[in-house]
Image (cartoon, rainbow, N blue to C red; front, side):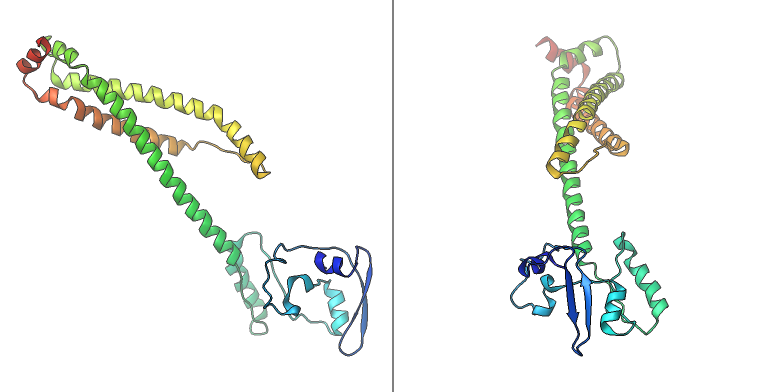
Length: 254
């Protein structure tokens, strides 16, 4: 029995209620439980009294059969743990009852939640992509600026007879090592902070949440960052690699 209906009529658990049918037959029942759907106050005034949630009373199959005077069901609700199995369940029931019953499925709440989760996932992925891109870009630009300030070192290496290809490879390797070290440090810090973040979210939401770093995501971030570093480093020192050796040495002397 709905809790609103019970409170309005002064009914408590264990009380006995007598139900009377239109033809005068009576059946006695015991109130075994109260329920709230959470939608009682959100109903509009246009809802018919017989269809209002607070006027719904649920009974066992035996009680309903005794009350109706025959063994039959007018409406049966079947619930599944996995909403994805609703279609399969409907097909099974259709084969079972054939044309003797009209069977339909209602998964509006699940579809709404699925849509919301999908939108949240896309937004999260967008934020993640922007964060990774901006982080890699800023890190790469800082490293590229550092490389451009090493033109004197480049000139000295060229004067020693080291080829420009070797110099470029060495600097790109240095940038990649520095980025990898920074990435490892960020990963360690994230690993240490995740338990605290999980505990904070669990306290706010009232349930346990386990946050974990995905290896595939970490690998993707590392590859994107390294690629960005290589590209930005190449762009930063390419002008010095393109210049003639004499011009580079003259800039060093100047």
